[in-house]
Amino acid sequence: MVAFANNNSLTRRITLCALITAAAVIVHSVEALLPPLVPGVPIKLGLANVFTLIALIMLGARYALITAVLRCIIAVLITGAVSRLPYCLTGAILSFAVMWLMEKPRRSDRISCVGQSVLGSFTFNVGQIAVGILIVGRAMIAYFPLMSLISVPTGIFTGLVAHYSLKTLMRTDYGYRKI
Amino acid sequence: MCIESKKSKTTESGGNAKSRRFPVRPLDAVIIAAVVLLSLAPLLLFSRGTQDTVVVSWHGNEIYRGKLSTPARITTPDGLNTIIVENGEVRMLEASCADRICVFSGKATPAHPIICLPNQVVITVIGSDEADSVSW
Image (cartoon, rainbow over all chains, first blue to last red; front, side, top):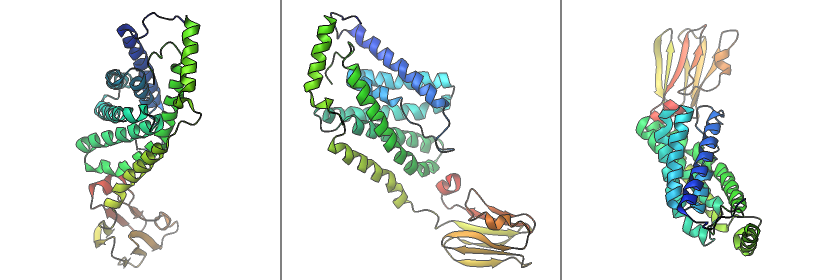
């Protein structure tokens, strides 16, 4: 590991953002290969949201939004399910927005990554279902209770993943910013 | 330099409140509870199933049509099948055929009609709401 003179340079931030995005794309694509938890209902672990959260905490809001949007576009092109792009994009942007709003309470240590992530995965579902209502019709509401109930344990899990990843990442040279 | 910077960061995070073993804060539990309540809210707002319509057809002719909420006991004109509507659900009570698949198939839903092939009886539930008929 090499220590850099300027730990906070623009190049460094862009590179880290690209790395996080690349990891998010990989996780998203691998997750898309897994069979659905409940037949017919699009429930996923949402591990790719961890990277939005990590980018938000390590790099700030602008890079987190870039990570979220690019992750959706690239992963959708890789998996070939382009029809899922509006769902993914809306969900990712909405969950980013809510997690960004929760950034201040988290920094003042009133909540943790876990609460932030639960709210994020909940709003991801809200966004997906909102798009589903526009595209498929009102029937999508029926999915909502099941999907958002399952988003709670997956959100807790992804929040814990983000927490422990950040704990480790902050000890490396990448962690130039205080969490 | 590298080791030094690493060391300083470790001690910094070591003194930080965020490095505690269990990361969850009390407000996190409030958030989780709120999300659970919010996700259950549509179930209370849209109580389903009561407005569905039951249609029984026998040899291709409709012999009964009624709400799922109104209890009824229907016997086909040949007397071979008995259908019962109660507690907001409809099922085949009796059938004359040998295998009685229709009896064992339980209650009919919009997605799963009950069909008694030997006696040509079909029980369908038509959802009043789009959400019911498509997804349940």
